[in-house]
Length: 293
Image 1: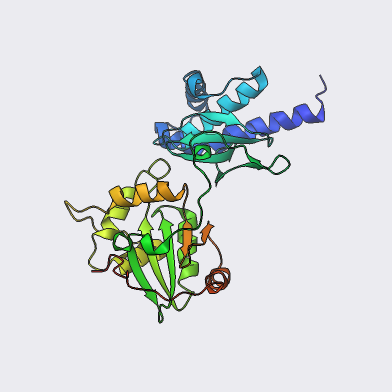
Image 2: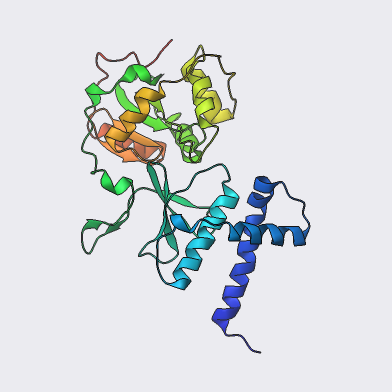
């Protein structure tokens, strides 16, 4: 029987998708490499998919959503995923993780944090928790509790920059590489571990915060992968930082705030950051404790 090009392509994609699930499957279930055992485990995982966290729709779309949920569970067994919904963009799905909302493609490898907008209708079409939060205005920099942040001074440190960062966020690590090239800036880093995505991030944040030299410990972790030893009975100020991030509408990391209150989500090159900071240059004022020790 001759298959159409589309049918052959779908069959190929199915095989590739199955192969892409193998590393996460081995991690989640600690199974052997025997192909029969893999197939049985995948079938059992498919049967266990929780339909209550998938939005309703036609059979084809529902099957796609089941596949997305299965892949997410196989790749991130420690993460709790909530509602999974289709979006108007083909192949892109919205998934809730506690207060965070992300957009993923079917394999579950790539995540986009933020909101989805219909520019023709000029409206936010993101569903879930993030959509309920209004777009954040310029931040009142002077009101930020910088005593709960790690303070790092580059050069004379005349420019001010706040960064919300996760110790296990790959884009946060790229940002730190770029920030190391930015001169004449005082950086205040609020530790914001997203445990739904990175289960070990909170422990690393605690270890950094409880180090004798927080700035040096943070740089060593983000640039060189050196995790400091945890100090028993000491934790980072999560009870202050996480509500602050929620209040400001920060749903993902990294997230930057300039000294004049302008914000920039995501990582950026050193030159862009420096130019952005120079747009309105303000000296660092009285509130400069920044969690130094």
